[in-house]
Length: 193
Image: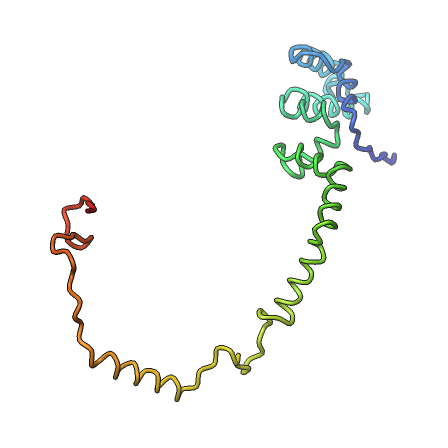
């Protein structure tokens, strides 16, 4: 069994055009015409004695599938087969973003901004001091937080004093404007005076 070599992903975007025998600035009709001609020539049913015809026919189908789709053709022309691989992994709409973020200047800008602002160190400190040993530290069961603990006796005393204070004073405030309408009583239209 022959060992198949692994193809490297190119960024030039010319190999599929070479499979169809075309150049990069060909039209959609040129692609269709060339594909039909070569597909008839290398179809496996027309060439049963040629084992290479099946592989050539698969390459033709792949080239036609990519170059006949406008979006895939644009990605292939701009980024090559690496762009097609990225579009399969991350989606066609994210190809430009992927290549922009993987460029040397974007990586350098990210590193410089992180170092100048101290964000890498700051994020580590915030996470450590708030979650590991700070306010957000997870409590063990049975441990009570001294900031929020109120004894039952203090709570009962507070309820008693609130009842004594509120029970003796009557409500003496009346509405200041008798024609004032509220949302509870109204004709559906809000008017403000």
